[in-house]
Amino acid sequence: MTSAASTGSPVDGILATTTIVLSLVLAVWSLVAAVRHRPPDRPQFVGLAVLECALLALAVVALVGLGGGARPGEPGAFFGYLVTLVCLPPLAWVLARMEPTRWGSAIVCVVCLVIPVVVVRLQQTWAVAGG
Amino acid sequence: MADTDAPTRRPATNSGPGRLLIAVYLLFAIAATSRAGLQIATRFAEAPVAYLLSALAALVYIVAAVGLARAGHAGRRVALACCSVELAGVLGVGVLSEVDPALFPDETVWSGFGVGYGYVPLVLPVLGLLWLWRTRHDPR
Image (spheres, each protein chain N blue to C red):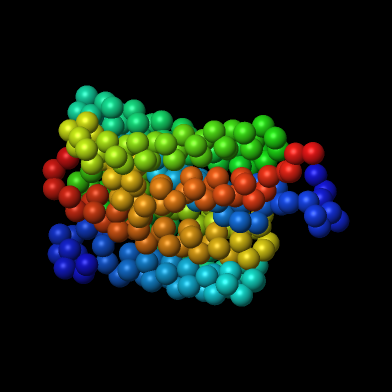
């Protein structure tokens, strides 16, 4: 994955990797909570908040890259994924607040498994050649 | 609907595992809507059937999520219809895309039984129907 960074993609690097790792850690944490019949706990909500900050930072970096003249391979899909991405942690937050049971933790887990996929798709839509 | 002190009542479709189901439906609604929107806006002429199908899938996911979230009698019927359409869609498109790939020159959410989405589109309507069955109110 890191070899693609040579193309100068603003969404491929330590920040993107951080969001993926953070998201997966949170997914495991919430999965354990769901298996143990625990409702979403404080670490899950804090984790979602931290994750959202990291994703917003990623979005800012991407927009700065765009401002600097860089262009994604598939602009439409890229922006679609970018907007979706920053909306996912708030979605998990709201649904987890509505469901203070083990299923709330399960929701956090599912969303946190989707986020890395979206990050990778974001990188792919940047990297793809042509339009 | 306060049913906290009625242990024999089955859960509503919009609580517990149902809420998780709604969350997944919402994710798919977002994925299918953005995909269909983008395809139709940028290259509709290339594969109109596939893109209209994406749009239909998107609509079904949205309505299913709303149906499950609304619970109640009408909501359940809406969700039931959506899950059935979904299952028929994912099976039908899955088979058709294997038999005659030319029919769907571009991927849809349902192509190859939803392989592009980890087969979740295939599992989701089944889970939806199971959940509707679990939460059914026994008639009489």
